[in-house]
Length: 103
Image 1 (cartoon, one colour):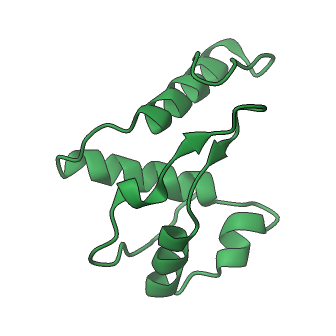
Image 2 (tube, rainbow, N blue to C red):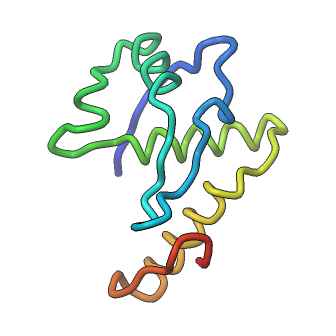
């Protein structure tokens, strides 16, 4: 289990990630500025979070999203789609993926 402690700076919102899916390969695309602000406020190495041997960017985004919802934030359709896709892969195995927007 990965444990990550991060601080979300005041004025940084989940919607600032501007989550979307790449139309060609379905990869999740997001703005780096909020991630950079979180890493700076938390004393985390952004290179390690994003490109390290065990990148934790997805863990960071998922934990932030959970906190966002707990605080009454609106559901994000891209993150919800991604979470459903991950749930189905865990449930049924990793042998398939859905086209973007079809989890």
